[in-house]
Image (cartoon, rainbow, N blue to C red; front, top):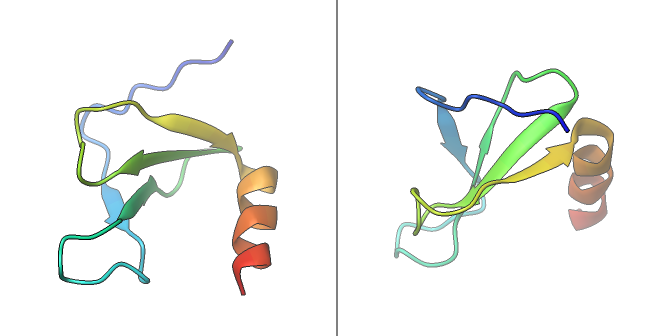
Amino acid sequence: MTTHDLTGARWRKSSYSGTNGGECVEVVDGLPRAVPVRDSKYPDGPVLIVGADAWQHFVDGLC
C-alpha cells in the first residue's frame, strides 16, 4: 500500500461548488498517479485516494 503525506497540500475546490456552503469536493493536483479527494465541509476527515486514470474516467463521465 502506498501512503501519501498530504501535510501542506494545496487543496482545490471543485469549480462546480457554489458559494452557499453546500456539497463541495476538494482535490489535490500534481501527485503522480493519484488524486486525493475530500469533503470540504470536513477538512480533517477522511481522504479518498483515487488512481489518476480512474479519476479521469469519473470526471469525463460528469460532462
